[in-house]
Length: 59
Image (cartoon, rainbow, N blue to C red):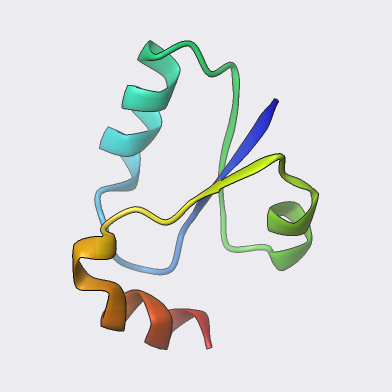
């Protein structure tokens, strides 16, 4: 299963990446590429406690 960890310029990407790997995920990619995100089986938006900043960066 592939997991796309969206890099939108905020959030602690590497902590989330490391947590996913420790949980057993073996195909995790940090990306801002919409094509990579579209092909992923799962998508993670790190730092969604500040969702407005996330939303604004994705637009």
